[in-house]
Amino acid sequence: MRGRWGQRGGWQQSDLPPADDAAAWFSGRLPDAWFTGAPDVVVDREEITVIGELSPLDGEFTDDAARAAAESGRISRWREETRDERIEIARQAEHRYGRKVAWGARLGGTEELFTTLSVPVMTRLRQPERQVLDTLVAAGVARSRSDALAWAVRLVGEHTDEWLNELRSAMSKVDDLRAKGPDL
Image (cartoon, rainbow, N blue to C red):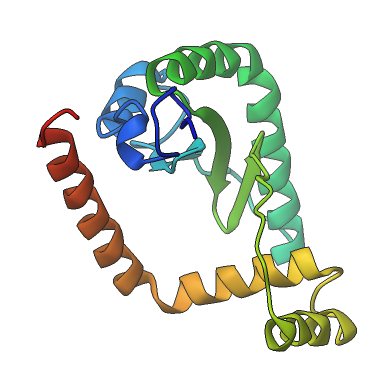
């Protein structure tokens, strides 16, 4: 079996170009006027997500719904105005890091992501696990088993964030050691 970059044994974290400097690269590459500070840059094996805070809105709003609408409108305007430049920056980053780039913007209480990947994941579930998914579908929590599984993964991620961060750190150390090892 060949991995993503033609190596034997399937995918390994070390098969991808390193993206340790992605946050710094984007901070240096993005126009200063786009965001109020450094963007949040999240990297996984398929995608790099860049989310920045837009400058605050001026003016008063009659209620929270009006403020949310104005925030969404500002994010939409930013998305349209920066499209061509974002495409060029994403092209450069995709070449550098071997991953797709997704974009997002945050303003006040509104955050919108666009051009994100939705990656299919194959899994085998036994009846008890399928029954959990089917219960979520029947209760209207999710539209399908796929949506139910995504919901469950998000829920686990929210409640085990510290443990998952420790696990990712340990995996990164293993990849570093593997890269230093002998070539077979």
